Image 1 (cartoon, one colour):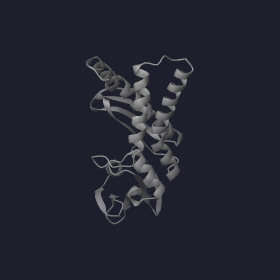
Image 2: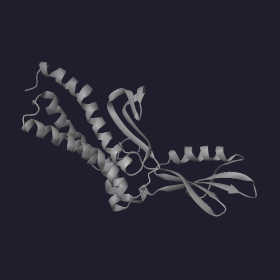
Image 3: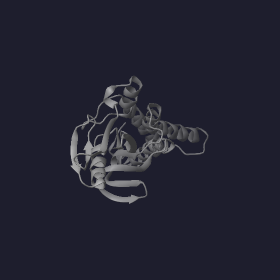
Image 4: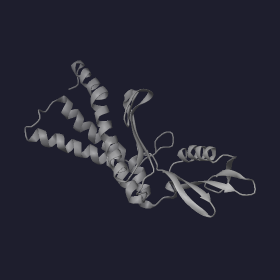
Length: 226
């Protein structure tokens, strides 16, 4: 039965165990993103203002709430690769929970409140990550993305943005997915900077440089797993 003495145990779960589980979850996304050749990989733990950064890890003020993995330029940018990346978080949570249970059953680890909370909230994380549902703000759960990928839904269609030289205007034009002009520049670097900004804000997307009838992919921006 729950009592006043149990309150500190819940604080332990929220402020220590949950951030660890969140880190394990994001590590799963990172592993498969790295395996698929992802670049500029970054892991964010928590929300709010940034507390500190260490390599690819960024910890924010409310470190016990929310997590995010971002990356660019997947070399293996296909549907199966994306499914593995989005499933990686729940997979790592499941592996971690099974390892803890195995160690306890083989007397290599003492069962206590922390290990109980770790396995319990790992299963909690897995359930809500794989439950196919939309989140506030327009994001989707990992399960929703995976289901849409399996069904080949159009809402996951990759948009292509272009930087293209316009011979008559003698300008570099940034074009959206429908070939409409976003902005024109005299300098190619400025055009590329604007195109990166637009493409990154419209994931999943790819950016190509188009000149003399040839298109070269500059970068791709996959959808970000949570």
